[in-house]
Image (cartoon, rainbow, N blue to C red):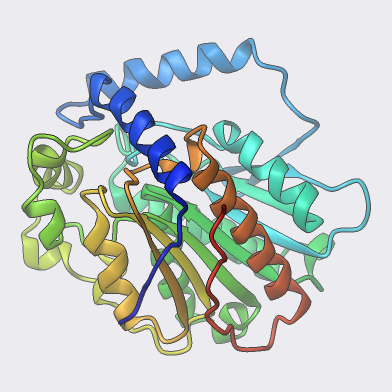
Length: 320
């Protein structure tokens, strides 16, 4: 078995079930056209104008904007963060709270990639942006030249992070600098894994029944065989020489099989299946999500302290 069942107490499970009842009333995220994502993106940016932002540096890496957060002292490593949003919404700023948590807990700098979105750009263009940012960080950034690097990606960002790591195999010395990857409920097969194709109408947060159509809309003009080619679909890539990875997915997520199947192929991986958990759970105001983030940050700290060592899967203790 390539994954572990995340241990959860009865109070944690009950809390998650109550939150799922709230999610059931909320609209599912759908990609049906290019108009709705633009409206959501406009609302996101409007809300961000009224939120106090942390002290950040905005830098242009070629044509790719990145957002850099630093700890108060000297960083012990660097996290390359790739945000989610279904490839069509989101930006680096929306991960500020999560990234500040990593900065404080792990004493790292975080470089978050503001890649182009698929409303105007083919998915391949998003991959190019993330690869350009990664190569800059690993090869052309003197400030962080001697520091170990960990990739973090969530949902569509998990897809882009895995695809970027596969693309970095063209430059073995750069890939060797990556000490680990933390991937939350990523999308690794753009034709749809079995759990995507069989998703029923009661999925939470994501529009399960419409996901295969959405993936085709994101990759127009090509066949499923072409969609399966890595790094476009990382699941079918060669994972020899990949850095250690930590993965999480919820058992209620239509994308469950994406994580479980890629974990079977990743040479050095620790993967966790979370009970009663839907897509996006690290953002939920529940104890289980808090514990996952604490565990992830501990894993990142260990990878930075021992960047050359193999990661040994461990079992998180349950909460009473």
